[in-house]
Figure 1 (cartoon, rainbow, N blue to C red):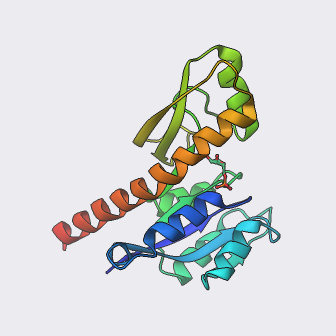
Figure 2 (tube, protein in one colour):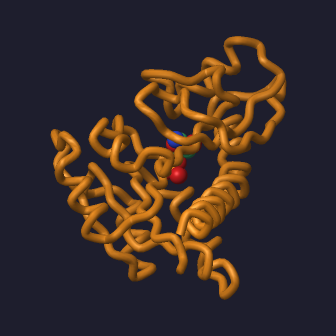
Length: 199
Ligand code: GRF
């Protein structure tokens, strides 16, 4: 049985698109499929992308303490929660119930340039200001410690001398689109292996 994925996204949803495209394939749809896209923003472009692909969408209140999100995840029998540009902290009730089954992408090489407030352009600005010659992509499991969960995959991306936060972000994003869907596939396969062994 394919793993049932919920993707949570707050913004433009290009990583969501990469994930939907990756699993829209005869071989890979047997490993995982996106069955729900949810957002804390009802006007998120990510929801439009999902609806265009005929995937169920939902939004929940900005002040949700986790109850609305958990109810959705249970209703859709979600196996794996994928954060793709999701800008809110995942409530601890969700982390508890989905321990080891929430996965995030971060546009830098964690543990560097992560933590509270490190998102979007701020990450790339900090990388450039530090003088680092490389940045990258990190895919990690999410726990209650911001950007500190176990790392699943990392890929390096060079920082050019002429880079602005925008040019670096674009180079990193291209790599996210390649690495993130494959890391999600790997985690889904490992979960299935684990549940087959314990069955
Ligand atoms: C990505 O750079 C991701 O690493 C970060 O937020 C951005 C989301 O972009 N967490 P998109 O909405 O997937 O286009």
